Image (tube, rainbow, N blue to C red; front, side, top):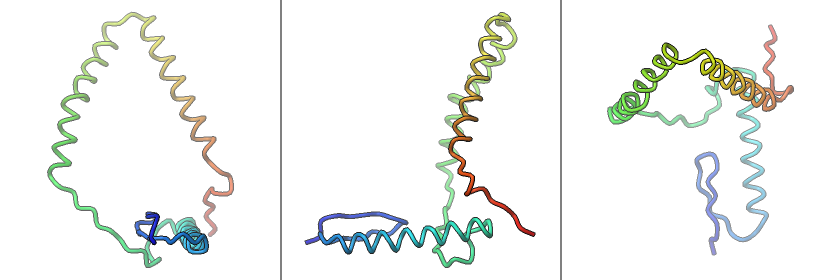
Length: 125
């Protein structure tokens, strides 16, 4: 009796209730992911691994969706921003600058916390 569907690396596998099937499948996929990651760290590319490539075709609908959101949100936001910069008080500009600075520092802190020292790429020549 097939009970679970697990989607990993784009493959769909059906498992029976035996844990050996699950553990061997996960072990194979983890070793595959390690091999792909190691190849990418060494070569800066995924080419040469034999991994199937999936072409992503862009269509006109994507362009129109992006254009719609640019016109709906992007352009009015720019008008508001320039109006704020030109006609607001110095105190409002200072508060805005402090908010931007704090947001920048929080983002940099989050990025620095997510970097693992052993994962840094070192180029050997």
